[in-house]
Image (cartoon, helix red, strand yellow):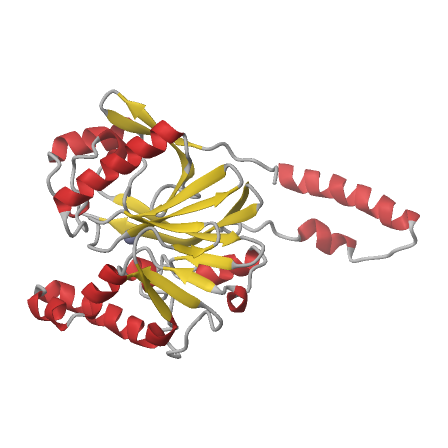
Length: 328
Ligand SMILES: [Zn+2]
């Protein structure tokens, strides 16, 4: 007899007693033998308040990036491995989570990015986790796109049916970003490996063209959600400031991508940054601002839920995750 069996039988004994007291009968042995769910996590969402707004971070899953030279092409390989190892992380690959933000402002239900859709089997969990958080795709009225990479726009259209997954949403993206992905010159000048990414983005944007506002940085998209220019990762990359009362959080998209490496070495390139020098300038500026103003951020690719503060740390920075809280 295993320890678990003993515990379960004691537990059942108590339940039997309680059921008997209110005159209920039930499948008592089945309760004892019900297997605990193993090999799976609970639904991936985390909720917290920002002023009068309610923010929910929902996981779409994760991406495994390897080799390290793809993740950070200009980082000295042994130094990068040391930084990862010093944080008890593997030194042959990097895990990039996909944390999607939803804000309920009272008047609007806004989703920021849409995950990778069905393109990777470690992703595509957005809709099931939204539903676990009590949010139906049809209730989302606005989708803000930080940039046009496939792990951010892949969930817009259902790859099997061709239908839009969020039937009542309109979209907001920067005009620069929109123009880049839809300009025939982008495809014409692209290296071979990038062509499917550009063609995929153009197809997705075709499906939402009529529904999309092409905005300038600084635009207030809905009351309390304002676009910030954080270009560099892509040419029209935007972050979003969510503010209500005197509280704020910034959805930073891919301006900062790793919870250890980017903070310790903001000068190391991220392999998918399109304008690598501008990306460094942008993330340094953003981290300076967030640490000085003590404003928290949500990092799309940081360890779930990617919510925390940036601390200034001797010329570089340090990520300080916000403690889990039951209070809303
Ligand atoms: Zn990304």
